[in-house]
Length: 378
Figure 1 (cartoon, rainbow, N blue to C red):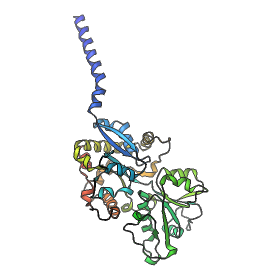
Figure 2: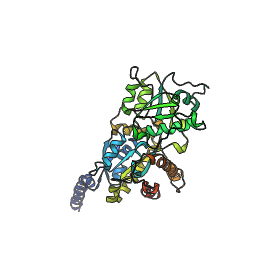
Figure 3: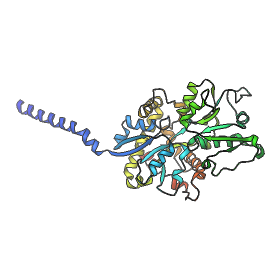
Figure 4: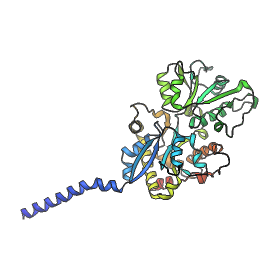
């Protein structure tokens, strides 16, 4: 009897060992590859990194293949190409006209990631004056300091639209003849823009400059006195350049209707080909979002590892990460705050759709079904 029991236990042990050895390989075969574009900053990497490190992608059957993109325009090209190399990706507000563009290979917004505070307006010390000594630069002080300046921005990215939004706030309540206005040699940046006057004293020259070049440009001999950029360039400037100071941020100066969200967009072809995979992907992002909000510093470190940045590069103050309660409240109805953020983003990006192309409606641009399903079931 003892011998029989021993043999039985040995058989069970062998079977268990074979099952345990086979499971990872079997599970790997069951995972579906998704090609994901991320950005190497606080907004663009941590959520995906958390989904990977905490096992949310694997839990939902996703094998993530990451590409750290150099910029939003390059990412959109990869996603909209006839032979696309990305299925889904994180974007800032700068290239958010692409899901609104009805021509060519289409995209859709599918998830609200975070509210960005990464966009920053930085200038060399002494150009702007805190007249009322309240510890911040108010709109009147920004108005005075900006007159006649050259501002260096990568206009095709989020800071391009962000600066236009800031200028609207600075000009609010002023007669048209006194308002500041933009000139730029980059025609796409001027699409849909009309200057309020032609007074040369109120002119601001916007010069299209790669975001990655801003730190060197603001260095002592770089020639750039005023820049608008996004992290990590902005963080680098403030950490390494003692002659630079922060003039304005989203959280410090923008109302909710101008606090444009960072989002995830997906190829419409991919959504049509793989709706169940797309739902699984959003389920993983939502669970990762909840974890990120509760473990924000750890999420930053995960993002640094994924994008191969030094420890401490990502600053959580550069974003607002929604909690589970916030997600639930923001998308409780079509009038809730999440939809307000998305509609504000839509409205500000409609003018950037190339002239002559079809402009999709908001409902056509934002496929909220995946997010709503995640909110209901998880």
